[in-house]
Image (tube, rainbow over all chains, first blue to last red; front, side, top):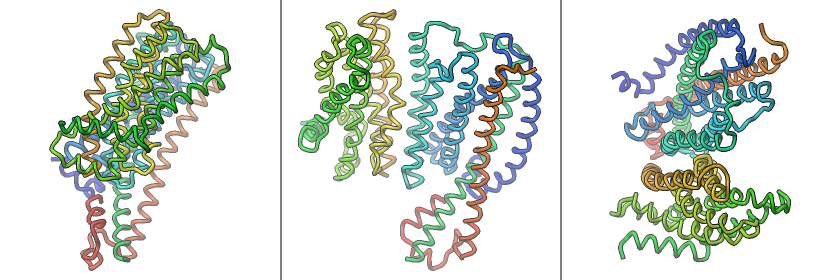
Length: 242
Length: 222
Length: 70
């Protein structure tokens, strides 16, 4: 019922406009708490203070993957259910997911420099994230190349689904490739268990970033709906003038 | 002649005639491999070691080259509309076109690979492994590229977009193709492990690719 | 406390995160403002989205398509 109601763009706009300030405020609150927790977390016995970078790196990786998940669900919404909201959500999710993947890569690289002695290691996780980032750029390229929005949505949806199928295979093959070439586990961060003194701030930080993701996605979706309105009115204007 | 065989023969004829892309792919492949020593230096020991990787990378790029015309040419002259309206299942037609594409661009690469491999000082076992991995792996490249070609069919600058969206998806094929070719001439991994995965990738992409490509074509031509 | 030797990298990582998040927030808010202004401008010039005026009657398929998109 709720999903059907949201198919009406005006109703979605009204809901988004009501929700965004609250969600944004909640995000700020949780962020304040999360940063406080992260700063007071003890140093790791192996990584020292650089474990603080993990509070950004891990949420970045999580949201990079969540972004593709959102695009996959939206792709099903576009292709199977023809839900009008799915197109706009998919378009809004791509740059946000790409940005968080980039954040994961940059912070991982800055963590690697003091820990591994180099900004980039062809570590399995970093490499998978890099391929994910390239796939995001491909999806954004599709949105930017196809002029008609609903046609672009369908092309991007198919790419998102194919990517969702291929991503686990890419992850598996990169892991395999990595062990083939390195064979050592000194580049693995952390260990099998993370101490609660690190884990709890990490989870709170991940929650804060997830709320931020939700707020941004909602706001970007609202923008996409408005952009379509502008486009529609411009077309009307042009056809009226003709 | 069944309709599928007719499409297969038509596509193969088109690609070997004037304006077709069949020989272009091999020429590109040979040129890229020839350029490599100019970038890396003429050290035969190094070239021998990374030879399979060079040849695989060149094959990957060459197989992309003719892909953007796979559906775009049919879209331009209207035959894609006829195919869509026809009674043959679109998935089968798309698979037949992929087979034709592989026969005209993939197969010549496989024939040329051992010859150009001689320039990189590859010995007999390496040559054999390379040909075997290319036979097993290039169908996967064709079928993954098929989806990209279907997505990019109506675009003016489809070729560039095609490369951007297809190349990251081919990472697993490249990894296991090169690993299998290297495993045959030494190393810690038995040849069978990566080779089996490579075959699996080809089979899986030949099962998924035609459906995804057909879906993309239906959506785009709607 | 923060170890001084790696402080630079930690600060750089947080700055990078702030830049990425700031860019996203800035993009979303600026985009929203520009779109609202454009919409208000178009509406002021008399192009309402659902006008049943003669303009709509003469509009071709492009208009219908645009309406569906909106």
